[in-house]
Length: 221
Image (tube, rainbow, N blue to C red; front, side):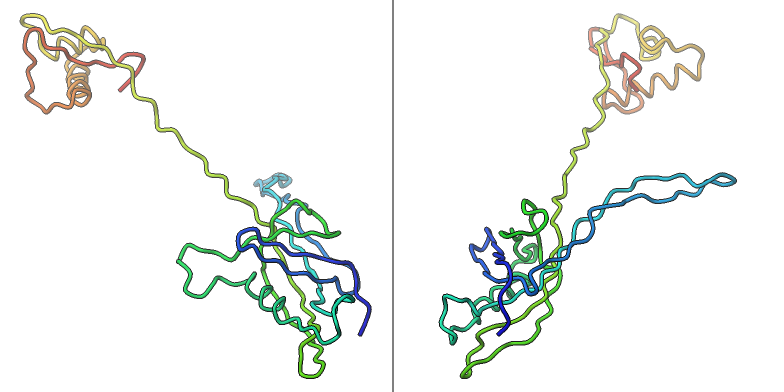
């Protein structure tokens, strides 16, 4: 058997399972996390350069499962193989919204504080001794997990209102003239409609003397 490289531990806090492995050839490959600039065409001009944002990182690990020096040569690696396979799959019969687990990596790899998910697993050779799988090779492609930040959009603030107390003989048209500054038949008619909407009333509503009528202030409509 070839010598083992640096130790790597894949940890799933969600399922409380780990995979202990070694790097084959002693290295990992990472890509992504840089760039993010694009050209935006401008008719008749040199294209503008716009930053759209970087892609999440991708990490490729060539792993060796099993074959630990402290283990007897016949110790099998089945458990680690099953666990690694489970890291990349949604459990059978799991609820629709459930996803495969997120992972942390312990070892000398880039972005150790990041969380990852399994994007792909390519299984290689498996060493068998006396009918027991003692060492397995796998190329694991991990993708950095970037949490979606939900943004709460506040609804438009309600228009500020005040109350007009109806006097004897006043109509909504009078309120439109006095409180809304409407002039002319068209403006007054629109002002009456505005007051009806604001007060939740229908056409034909005639407030009585002493009734309170809401009207907008500060440009509310």
